[in-house]
Length: 347
Image 1: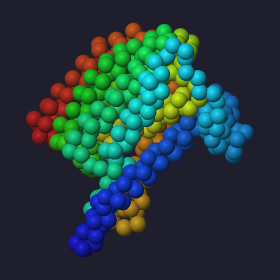
Image 2 (image 1 turned 180 degrees about the vertical axis):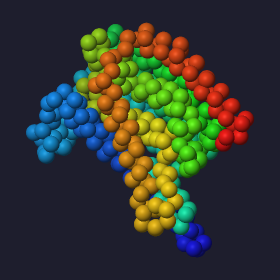
Image 3 (image 1 turned 180 degrees about the horizontal axis):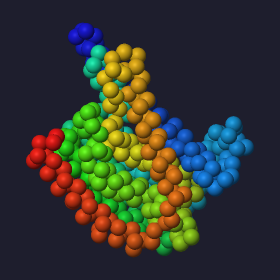
């Protein structure tokens, strides 16, 4: 059994296979983003009692392929007075932020003979801080888009994004620190594994709620999409983009939706942890943990999409007030709760 474990470790930690695993993860995330786009369009149609995409493929499954062909073949327009270098390079930075997050994001685990092997391109001791930092890079890309376009609506959208992101990154970070204190680690894999007996959403429900709201704002999902509100800013910071440059920005948002949902599952919903009796059988140990993890991610995405059709968009002043006057004190209260539980020896 020891030799088998050593053979599995040699296979999993082989640099070539790690590189192949990283490429597979990238492909899986892009495929998941395609599914998320289709799923949101169909679910929003169900909420509004209509069909949604139906004409391209069965139930509109190939609609995104048609949209991609349309975006690739449309004219790529650059405004006359735009800063061309920044205008062209900004989508690259936005997608780069996504790829850098993927480096340390675990996508499940394989359990063989009671030993857990994480499905991730790499593991870091401070992976949760790394993921949060790489996510924040996207704000630079958004500012590059807005500034280079020479469009007042784009600039207004970018500054709304700044106000929102600065306000919500603080409670988001405090909630992450609270989770790290409870898990005793900044490694997101160890944080997920620390929830084997009990999910952190049960031990710090207030922190889970604050984190989820702050994450929604950080991703720019309704009711926090003031930077793109079409009735005020046309398309916000993306107003001047056409063709596949718009497609890159649009796609990056949906990948952030998937990665944000994964963070919720990893930090508060137990990650891939399953009862031991379900993973004692080798085949189940290989399949079930990752399948259970992806199911929880899908349910979080479903919940986020449903919120879009249940809550109206807030005004930008309401968004700022919510972050500084409500979520920040609540996140500090949750941090005090976690420290108190630690002093009492609960964890």
